[in-house]
Each structure stands twice: as C-alpha cells, then as structure tokens.
Amino acid sequence: MIKLNIGCASRPLNDYINIDMDSIEDIKKRYPNLNISNNIKIYNYDIFNLPYKDLSVDEIRAEALIEHLSFHEESKFFFEIERVLKPGGKLYITTPDFDKIVEDWIKARDEWIDFHKSDDRSIKEEYWFGNNSYTRDNKWGYLTACIYGSQYGEGQYHKNCYTKNKLRLIASKIHVDVVEMNTKKWKDEREYIIEFIGKKK
Image 1 (tube, one colour):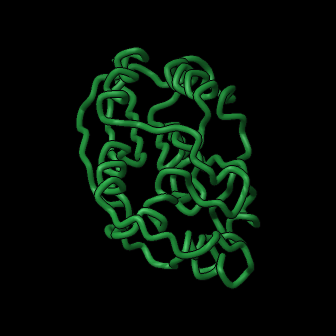
Image 2 (cartoon, rainbow, N blue to C red):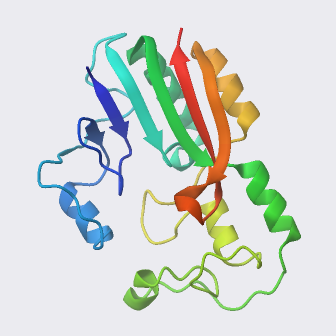
C-alpha cells in the first residue's frame, strides 16, 4: 500500500511516506522535545507534482497543511490529490475551523499587550502577541496566531482558511465522498480544527 503523510512536520508516522518541505534535521531542530524514530525518513517531494502514477495511492493524510497553501496553490494541491488517489482511497485532512476561530475572536477581549517577539527565548516559550499561553480570551494572543499561523518561520504562516462547507464543496469537485467531518480541539487544548475523512469515488 502507498500511504502519504503530506506536510508531516512534527507528526511523521511509521508505515507512511512522510513528505515535508523541511529535512529531518530541520524538523528535529524545530521540535527539540519530539522523539522521532531513527527509522523515519522525510522526503522533500513537490506536493503539486507527486512522483506517483495516476490512481495509485491508497491513502493521503494532510494534517495542518492546507491552511499554509495560497489560494493559487490550493487548486493545484487538491487536483493533484484527485490525480493520484485511487478509487476507494482514503483522504484525511485537518485544518483550523475558521468559522469557530472567528466566532471566538469576535467575542474575545480587545486588549493589546505588546509587539510580537522573535528572540530565541520567546520562540522557545511560544510567545504569541503579548502572551505565551494558548488561552483564547484575548483577541491579540493565540487566537490571532490561529488565523495567521506561527510567525517564526517561512512555511508556517497561514495563507488560506476553511469551513466545513468549503471542504464539502472541494471534496465534490475532486470526486471524494465525505465519510466523516467533525470539529475538535487541536492537540486537545488549542484551537478548533475540522477533521475531514473522505473516500475517493
């Protein structure tokens, strides 16, 4: 079976072909607390031109990836999924639930505290915009990072946003049936994400 884990970053998986723009060394440096198996390999494949034949891939995972693609890149990525995923193949996607994040942002306090910091200590402590917590009670903290992405490195910014309905419409365009779609918290305590599971027709 060919199973792809595209944009794996801090989530490389055994038994998958892990694909990311960063090398394994870069990933270990960015996530020093992550215990990555020595058997894991990261491939720097072009995600818009994957090295697989048409209808040859059994499963594609893209966790916390699609929000990093521009509007222009979005169509290229999803049509590439359509090309390589075989009939009956599984598509698994997670992405921030933009509806829920914006709803929380509107309700949050508007108390700006300080400019974003990018010194080594602030990066290590995951400092956002005036705080280094994941609380969502202030507009200018982690909630803003949920919308715009981490500001600590190229490739980490968010360039796009998704709702359940947008994902449903994209799925129909690339001939994928929605099997399941839920909203849950990322890593159990952070922003709300959409978890999409689909099956290629």
